Length: 115
Picture 1 (cartoon, rainbow, N blue to C red):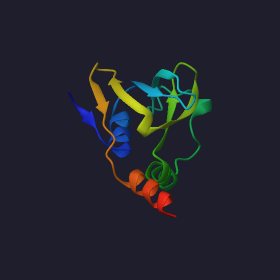
Picture 2: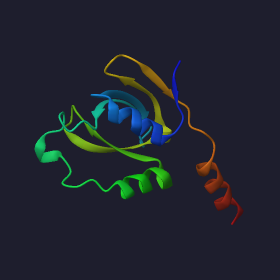
Picture 3: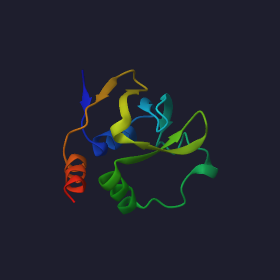
Picture 4: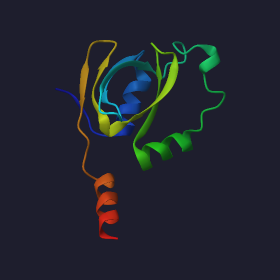
């Protein structure tokens, strides 16, 4: 079974796909399936960003693991915490399971606990 182990890899995979379906745990504890994309051909013109700030996108991913995706069914941008995503299924029916590496986030939690 193919795996994705980082938010950057998730973003790379999402960018090359027409759309994907993701399963993730919402903040309220409920499970959500979302059909989403970063393909501008699928995003209505009025919702396309006027500019793309790659530095800001990478900062959010690096610091918080937050991904911004366009929800194709609700026609709105959504923030998804990478560590709450269970899997991603591509438009070609390939499923990638998300396996979050222990690393920076765990180190941050330990540092907070030691203070």
